[in-house]
Image (tube, rainbow, N blue to C red; front, side):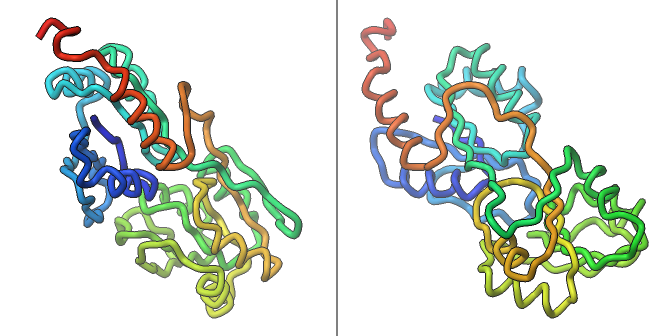
Length: 252
């Protein structure tokens, strides 16, 4: 079976499958992180070449189950996974963390895109904590009058950076206390992030400090059967393994 990964949920599922004799899993990374944390199962890095390439891989490797555990904002690979699974007649499950939901004390402004987030910062100069990853920074060059504290796993391409930026590299999750101290130390006035779900440390810190949050909304979730926990994905795999055709049924 193949896991399309790059998320904490994919890594957690890999750990659950490690050492299991009834399944031969492979975890695939897109290759956007310079030094991914390698799983305790076989892995591969890089794209497949679109729908046709992924469908060919599924057929060539005789994949019997596909789990799309990609990032909620990795929209294109989810589309490719859905279509490739249909072409190759491979059962597919989506493993995706639920989105964050604003609660009491939160001051969120939802926007449809990163460019809209940059525009939503307004004309008055602000000190911005920017946590959207390293590949979507270019729109903020159009809002160069703000200061940006940018956090990402790997250093961003300097060509994408707005002129007034400070870079922090680190791999989460980060606690509320950590991010609250960070925001206070840098005099942050607004948090900009994507609604990727998962650890809420920065959101809780913003709430505690009374800071507004500009939240980039998700696109519609992938279609098909979906679970939110690695344990549920493991149960789906077990059920599929128990009902798949035997070699005799397949004419082998």
